[in-house]
Image (cartoon, rainbow, N blue to C red; front, side, top):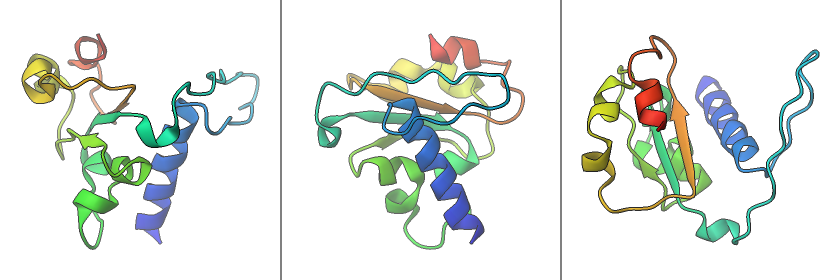
Length: 122
């Protein structure tokens, strides 16, 4: 059940990011709704950077197929490193990504996000 909740939360968060799902207001904060994608959902190119959740920790079975980036799209690129922060990928993003281009980039970091997250997001 915990695994399914993690997958569902990750999928909802990523879907909200690309405008498939519009989340309701949280107290007085308005969550911005993004415009609908201009290309078919099957053609959207996803890249996910993150820690253990994005990597797929706790998933029974093939995490390369069941981690939430792969649930968004089987062709998603999952660059997550478990038990890590954004410092390592921010130092060598071009080496990790190579020549690939992406429409949606997901950043999932939990703790100590100040070290490298801004550099990675650029």
